[in-house]
Image 1 (cartoon, rainbow, N blue to C red):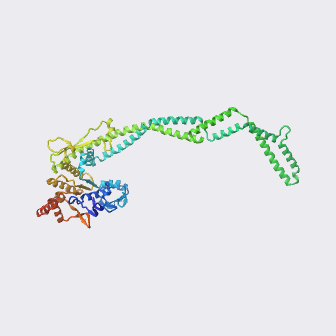
Image 2: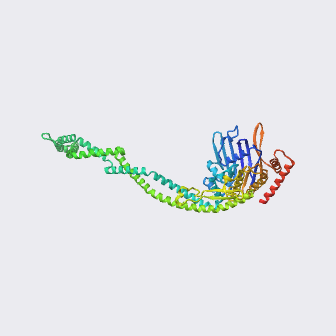
Image 3: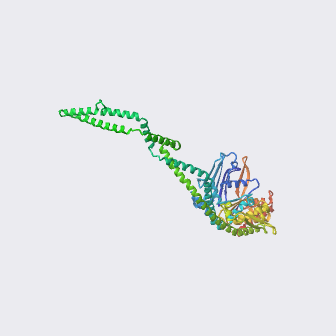
Length: 572
């Protein structure tokens, strides 16, 4: 329920605080007084589009705040909890600031929130019916929502089931479409990857192999020079022809030092050091001999090394800067092959999953459609009863359901709301055939039909506040009285805020606010004030008789208020 509305610097309003009561709250005023400005401010608080032109001239920002009692709206609690909003005692305070620079600041109970969350919250609290909303009845695409809103309790679970299945169906269908669209590209990629893996595997590369082969190639290419050097070293160490071996000379020197080692420790130490050198040279000579024997040149080995290095170079040019890079590329390619191969298998699994979901979704849609068709009969009967009260005694409403498609054709028609396509047909006069609303109902009749919808909806949802913005256009006299009584009746179950120009409706209000325009210090301002009983008499007299106030109009206005009070007492 909307309890308070505070407005600052919006259009002709500098500062305004409105307090609404339970029941029917009416706002009246002369044409141009600013009633629409109040509704515009209310719509801002409810999350509607912000227009910077609403900011009062000379100001850089406008602020609107609304206080709600959400304690009677249990469906809102999960949304508040999910977004971390605490509503102590059920109170919610919405604050919205718009600036000339384009900033749009929204707070809920002091916390900054996105505009989308504000709309979700206020949609559960307030239902606004504007001057031209009855034109929405001409949009047959919205007819199903009217029916579903009426049948909410009985179709809630099946409708949720349809939405969940449709979401799952759509998700799988999109995945399958993506898999199928990439079939050709995937096959080409698989062929290339398999060729590359086969080429790398066939080479049987091993880490460090290239370095080892490079070393072998250097030995082979320099074999003659190396062998010559080793041979000369052997000659110097082991002797050659008339050249004595240096090891023999050192061995003799060791023997001589051994002969004098007993004459002093220093001679013994020299003998030991020279003996170590002798053994080291002897070992080196042996190793040089072994290395020289290994240098036996093998042309076949030389060709193998050169060819192998060329093969490695070719693979590196394609797949990486080193043998290790090439091997890593091969492993990655194998993983991608596995992934792409699984996608091929997934295509079949997804196709089976999609068919299963389609069958389940079709069955859920049929169940939901059956419940809707049952509810549609009650809906039509309830609307016709309201229309009789509203002077359309011969009106007959029918919900026309299109035939459900066959299961094999349903894929083209699935939606989150099911398979039903409905439209409202009506006959407003006895003996006339049913026709679409757009071809039958006048503007005044559409307003009454919409009011009938709102009246029965007041019993089927937990929206706390209904706002009617001059929906009484085109009606007068006795019908105005009936419309007012309908609003008063809704006001016994919901809070109603109504902007009206009809005295019959204004008289039925539980509270009455007057919107008026004044000039103060050279500026035009819109003011809104709650009226006392005597002020209401004068305002209703004005609405009855125009600007001229007479004893007759005052008496008539007083009588209307007294009769309205009696009616409200009967409705309580």
